[in-house]
Length: 116
Length: 115
Image 1 (tube, rainbow over the protein chains, first blue to last red):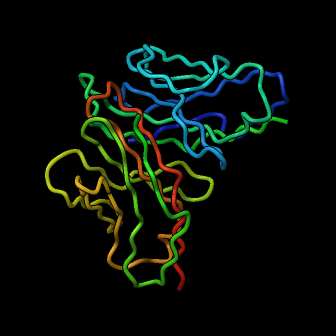
Image 2: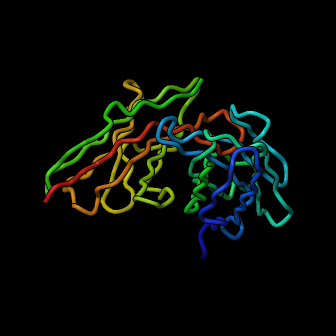
């Protein structure tokens, strides 16, 4: 079974631009979560989507948004990029069958975003 | 609020020796606990998890972890370290009463195994 895939793997943008990252979960997985990883703040939870609905949201400004499609694929968008948005953005999927919260999250390789 | 602490930024161990990477947690209810490993320029790989039952959990690549409720700890262990175990290790927690599968991660511990 294929793992979680994320595109693109690397991205360079300038301040003020906006960016869209994509995530395809493991087949059959209905929950997708996004995390930001930086050297200073570590791994921080952005948001989680389940059945096209945002189920949880971390403490990030409204410039960070996401969505999930009917095939469970997810995108996240960052508008008005700032230098501090430079990070590795990780997507994770889990089965989350029947809304269960015991499932393991499986991570993709990440998208490395650099903001100049 | 949920939180995870990994008190050591780095752990150094010689190949063949046992290793321990420490983790303590804080949740309002009962915890679900996870360990992940990250190699350079890669995503996180799942090692093991504690949901309920036996306090000693066995996982991938010979790793195991012991859940200790009274000490609110979930330390990762391996009887004999390999150079290839050198990586960044993350402990994570989820509150049993929480909706969804989002995780709170510790800051990570770099494991360095010398030959």
